[in-house]
Length: 525
Ligand code: XMP
Image (tube, rainbow, N blue to C red; front, top):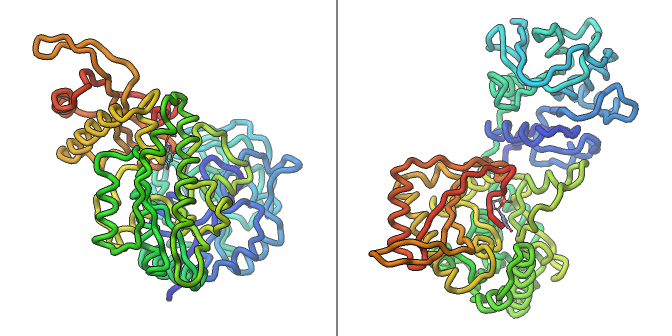
């Protein structure tokens, strides 16, 4: 099997590190972010299925001239040069490279933040094929005062500040501006030049080779033992289950738990799909009563989330104990962890503040003494979707909007009751069907309805009504971290409003949520 080419991003604390990785992955090139202080030698030898083709040093908040600022050890730098691995420094990364070559860095007279225009030297390798003048995005307080003669300056900003350099002999390149942000004109072209012209990346990330190498890896790890999978029917757990089935067949045991908080007919559809079309070893548990009883009269969102998370763990644990296995034992648990979560937890900056307690299957492995299998630890969501398509999962499942672990409970503001669930399910079903009819579903990251805890007065067939208000939400986003509300046309909203209010008993008013994230969040609770 051909090795996949890899670009390693060393993170010096930039807010854009993840964006660099995304931009590279969008070009089907595999990239990984690691803290600046990893053992590079060890990393290179540990990546047996990959060729390290280039290194990017990210930006960062510190100043190279500050005493204890983060540095790349000289030995690591020399090792990369010896192995002729191209290096690109961005912003702080550029200054670090200048420093390593003995250049001088000083506090800039004119600090550059935001847009600026640079003039490019035609002979640059990294900036080849671009216009003479480029509008780029800067964010730096320090700048280069002097560089050794052998390093060639390839562009300067309108403030006469160095904005890029190259040292071709050692395959070292620096950019003072950020090619990864959208505000930089031709940023993608610059990244392409680095990847394909300088690093000579050829073996792209292919879903088929990912599947082959992951299934081999999983087979070796699991041996004759068994693996458990909590299959919710969302994209990540579905793709993980089918990948595991491909690897270990009947040694995979899936459990789907209906917590009573799923959408209309959702559990039924999930179970049917996976049993009939994929012949999956799937246990179905209807635990709706247990969940709804525990949620009775609970109003606080965090309390709801915790109850649902804990009940899930209890039900799952109980059911797992009942499973009879002929030989071997259940030793592993599959989890659909994605790369953004991994980056957050390995970042040397430490984890961010808890806004909401997210509920997946956290807490299970320790309680049940299970080892984790996380096949998508290195992937972004769009890549998991590509794997799912390659594995033959239906389009509608792959393109489904994300659905939170606590389900409709966090879309019913205040306490959850069966009647509120009925109303919300019906509204949600009409909303999603209409989005599909109008071919809007795939343009939207996530759309859903929220049942508000207020009644309002209406008039229906000359009679006064006093019924519930529904808020509709639809957002566009790349990864759920930031989001904008979707701008529907009036025609669509009119059709939707008539359909919902005329068809769902218990609703007489509809409002549309026009907030973005931040400052709001996507879900209401
Ligand atoms: P917020 O509301 O924090 O949501 O802006 C961001 C994304 O995460 C989803 N979400 C969850 N997903 N378990 C999940 O698996 C959860 O507990 C959970 N809470 C929110 C949300 O739907 C959105 O896509």
